[in-house]
Image (tube, rainbow, N blue to C red; front, side, top):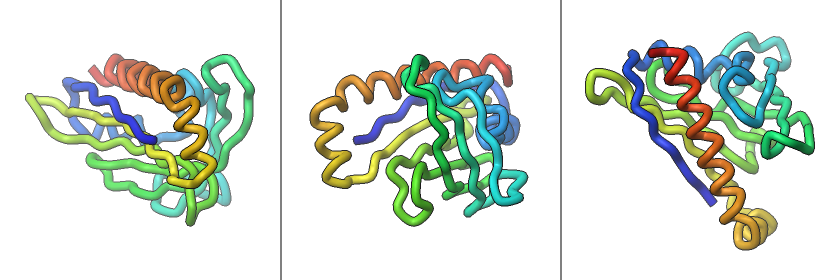
Amino acid sequence: MRGSVTVHMAAPAERIWDLVSDVTAIGRYSPETFEAEWLDGATGPAVGARFRGHVRRNGRGPVYWTTCTVLASTPGHEFAFGVGAPDRPLNVWRYRLEAAGGGTDVTESFELARTPLLRLYWALLGWSRGRTNREGMRSTLERIRRAVE
């Protein structure tokens, strides 16, 4: 009920973090989330800030809005947000940045909540959705890499 992808980028972590934490720019990089906007007067990635993303599931549809809450925001190191209720997110997306080889290793990951319904979903369709998520994370990170290198 989780997965991750790591891509090395020949760029400083601070520059990469600026891109992954700018949810309003996600449409340039993500194959599924094509736009996002801060909510409740938030203007940036502070813990507790909320935003909503406009998603085209699997790059085709259905199309829907999802509300997210920033869970971690450490410039140059980590940006994470939960999808759904702030205190009980259904899915947590995370970017971790680590200095390596004169650049930065960037890991994007997801982890689904361990609810009975999500466990059943993962047991039945996890093989497919996990692959789709890994492919999407790799696409997102490769697009970010091209932007920062």
